[in-house]
Image (cartoon, rainbow, N blue to C red; front, side, top):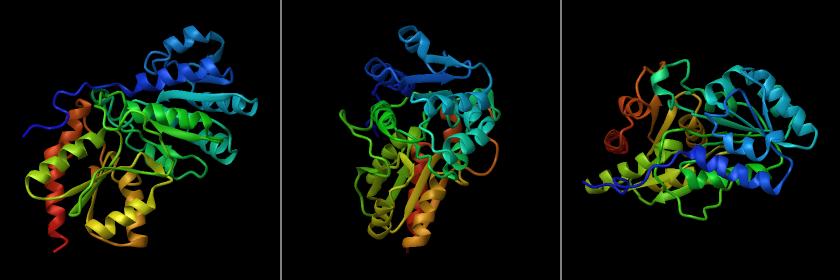
Length: 319
């Protein structure tokens, strides 16, 4: 069968991020970028050329990077901290906890190349724990946009948000799934396909795969609801509860370990409010092997066909 994204153009969400950051920087002198020798991978070259005094490159010193950003925030600036997500969240977690979350500073953390985007570089560069690490902290909303449109909307939201936040962006190209003019709302999910038999919850690079999976299930006579859950903390408990009541089964998909991430956040709501059969797709508590990002998703059971098969199997638990 043909899919809605077979001929769709793929976009790097980093381009949407830096495009909006440059736009915001031109309008507000308080917008600054802080990075860890990652001007190229964060695509900050044009921002540096436009605002040379507003790009602070601390070198490969992630803890210092977050501390410098907190100081800039305390001085009235609006810092966007840009770094590869495994190093931003892993190396600097204590500073994120103390200098951003506990101190409630206005620091925007941007985890670039998250999930398994650095696939061929192996487990040291995979960032499949970042949801869990940051989601455990108070005062730091966790957001994983699905495409360039939602990325741009989330960056605009972050700039106006008073307080810290974590934006999780990939470098893997994805098609557009949200309409032009989409407005990101913290704590609110979007239903991209309606259905009454099973619900698929996804975000980031998994959202368009979930949509294709729903179309595969439709060919089998199964009506699948697809929820794009970009806001992981706070999470849209109302839409999860509605899905549990109306479809009776929930399947989560994430580019992350199944422990502590999106699936865990959804399951917490389901268990507390309306228990139904549920399955979590993701990396099953192991280090991901070395392969391309898309191959790794397929290998861990998150090809559109495999997602659809998991949805079909989940329906049997409703009987």
